[in-house]
Image (cartoon, rainbow, N blue to C red; front, top):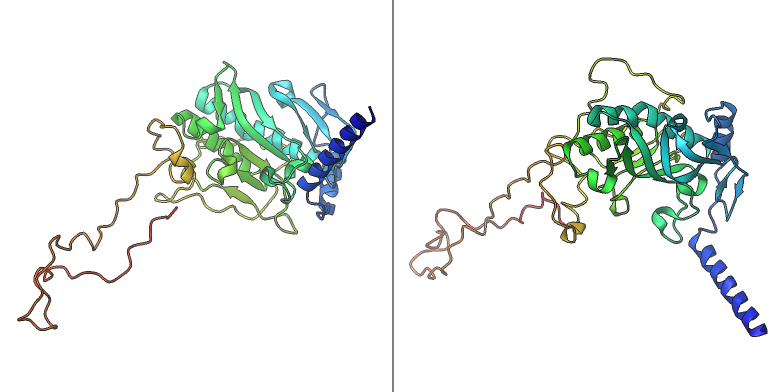
Length: 333
């Protein structure tokens, strides 16, 4: 029996050691996190209800956790269900509610004629960024981030981020409206095409990328003209009002687009064949520049004996061989 107890204890210690290795032991909890939570709660930006209930403070492991977590089963005053219960701190929860009211529901009504009824989202998890052991802690570790995987409309139709980003025109338009609306409210927004870790969800958080919290990251660059607000009717802005941050980078010009995780990345070799995408999301591929080596004759020219070196050899009079390097304007992967 003692052997069994010792073996179990050894396994428990080994598991605890692995958990500790997955976190950055030297990372400190920045003071602004608690300050942001306290300010949000003092302003009562989150209204508790049967769907949003306060919980005990989460302290650890390490610096993970939050002062006042909220357990959330529904958003929008109960009108939008969450596929699984989420845990968020006050700042991220308040912004998520405002994002839902200002962008997500108006976009759903614009492109599909009906509201969103359910959202599949992920929130609190004490882990490194992109689930990488030893990496800087993710904003999910502080209840300060949300991952959106899919939306279900009132009629049961499901729009996944993975499939809809290259789906129908309505799906593409809706998800891009959602993406740009998030860029106006959150300091970090990562969608398919930003990197290999976000090919199937939209990540939003309120991280501080500079001491004042004014810098924002909104990726990828997309070629898209928002349709929300084009009717000239002023739309109300929900509380909290978006923070005045530094301007986000302009969206992609006509001939540049980076939101293509399947067509231009190495992952495209493994991706299943897809239907031709809409013009909303892709531009025609540029024609390859003619190579200087194609013009050279196939047969080897006879060595010149009657000509000096100041004259071209037979077969090379019209187009001399270029000694410049091939064009590197196209991306190399």
